[in-house]
Image (cartoon, rainbow, N blue to C red; front, side, top):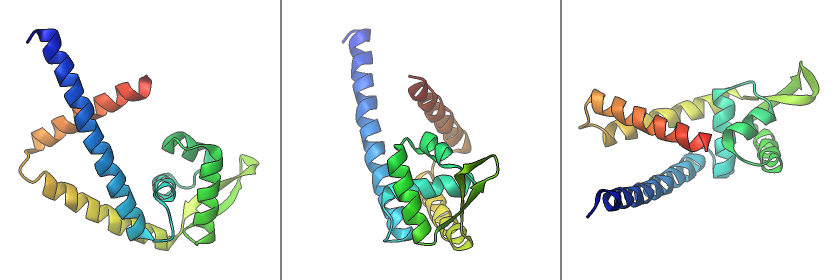
Length: 150
C-alpha cells in the first residue's frame, strides 16, 4: 500500500472510532439523564449540565454551548424549571432576559453523577500512565479545536 492509501485507511479508522465514541457518549448521556431524573430527556440533561457549570447563565450562552436551537432550549428550560431543577431571575443587564441557576438539590444530584462518571473513567483508564492520559487529553482537545474551527 502507498503512503496515501495508508493515510486514507487511517482516516477511515478515525471515522469508525469517532462513531464508537459518539455512541458511547449518547448512551452515557441517556443513562445520566435517567439517573438524574426519569422526567428529563438527554437534551434537558445537557442544558442542565451547562447551567450547573456556568450559573447564573442566560439562554443565549446555553444555546451557544450545547448547539441546540432556541426553541428547544426554551422548552427544556421550561421543563427544568417546572420540575424544580432550576430557578430563574431577571438579568440585571437585560431585563427582558432571565438568568438560570441550579437548585441545591440539582447541585447535589449532579455532583453524585460527576463522581460516578469520574470513577468510570478512572476504571477504564486504570492501566494508563498519567502521561498517556495527558497525551490523550491533549490530542483529543486538539482534534476538537480543529473540528470546532471548521
